[in-house]
Length: 76
Image (cartoon, rainbow, N blue to C red; front, side, top):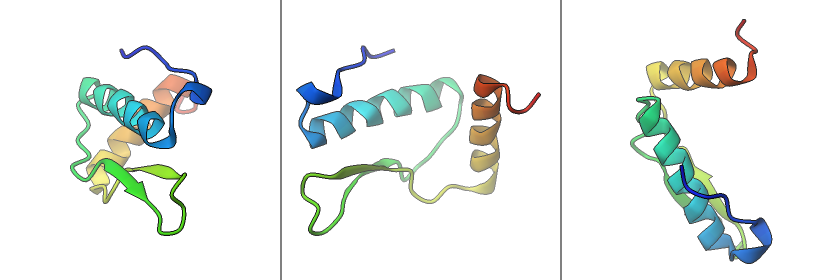
């Protein structure tokens, strides 16, 4: 897993790229595909970069929910 980088040391785009890489790796490990996963900037918000999950198929959304529930204990 990539080493976490403190927020204050990265510019917004670098921070978003690091978060995207971490998420992509975790999703791969859980065998969850989000084909439209990427970065997005909003017009007029140059300092804000979003990790865009994109459009998610129902089975991928259920798989993602299952992994989150397992990690939090919410599904027990």
